[in-house]
Length: 591
Image 1 (cartoon, rainbow, N blue to C red):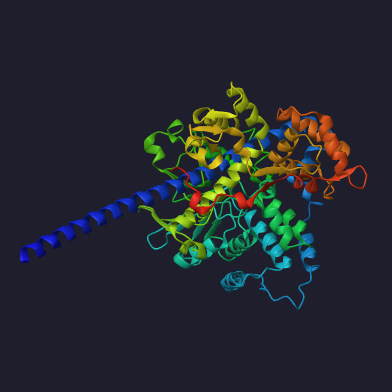
Image 2: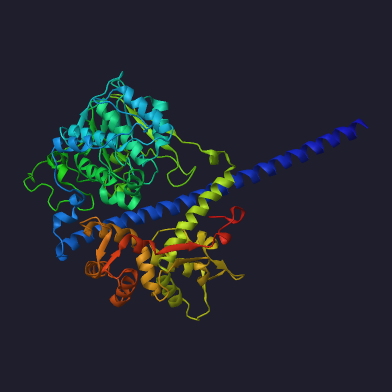
């Protein structure tokens, strides 16, 4: 009896152990699949972001082309100074400020100049309470910041000591909660707690002006201990594309244009970089093998109105025989040595290992997509890295729900990219479909997707999320465009033209803003036609001009010879059938 009982217990224990191992193996595999799906979603976000950066370069080239070919306006009108009414001296600026009344009903923070550390605390508490700083104070902070920046060199030199480490932060992109968290964990800026903020303070996030105000006020209180470098988003044209301009005009309806005008000039006076202990270079966007600090020290940075339109000759008088200065370690914010991400093509391995990228905006693409970080540096000591992540209510959801949310968002923007090239993709599919069956093997479908979109994505793994696959493993390629279409403002509009206008809508908005010299939001039909001819020629777009003219004529609603180009471009938007969007349980990128 006892032996049987013992034997039964052993068998039960073995069964339980096997069950535990099976469950453990299943759970490990489940988590690995979730992580793989998360990584595929991040890959989509990153690939599309890199493609957008290439679009910016193409836009830069177009502006040079436009300056040479567009005779209706002068070069100086296209530069960002088109927003400025006239160059005003400080007295005029102060007079403008005094004309702005702060009513007694205003409940937000009231700043007293000269500013003190108490004003930093006041601003932080106000922004935590979702208050908006009055336009008068915004302009006064910007004017005072610009006045101080003008006195600074292109590269700020700072020294550290064991008792005075410096904290370097990367891109914040308008993420106010990340800035709050950095200050909570690391302390507020002070004489004993210096900071370097390495550009890209604004754009993308919803609180760019609040982030900028905190940084500027802190800079005015501690000009020797808080350092600001210029990033590629400290630029009017970037702000037009990525949201800061709209944020300003939404929050400051009366004085928004004046704030934008002031920001344009302030951007040009931001230092290029910071040199720590004469051996660490902190600069936005990375370095190359030909980086010459001697040249960059002499650049007239205030003439760089836009990163999209750099001067053709940065410094004509520079001595070509001068040897480039070198630093031991480079810190870049969101920097890349090369777009391909292959550092070995520019730097030897031992030098590449001394390049560090710091990115401080957590949840950059979606909730839980990434952590932010900052680094503390001290002479003679190893850098100390600190990671963090702002947690929202969604971060407490189960991992599979968070991954599914990220996947849905990634697939959505990828589908929008696909629909903007629908005509080209269909031609590529049909060229491969010799039998006219409407189906392609996955490999051929993937080849077409990559050849047209050029996103360097794992299309085979993504195929089940983007199209219908039959029982033989072939893709019904027209299903790639299921449940999504671009809304046509005019039914007769040519589909290829609609796709082009949708695909280039951000570029066109920036271009039209540049030629809208009276800031009316309107351009004449003649300007529109001239700009379109230049645009289609430079971008090699094969579209019948009569189609564009037809749409423009219809959009001239009151027949006054002008069109509202912002409304014109908004008329082209993607419609998703949300009831057919991927359900969380059905989403399985990379599985």
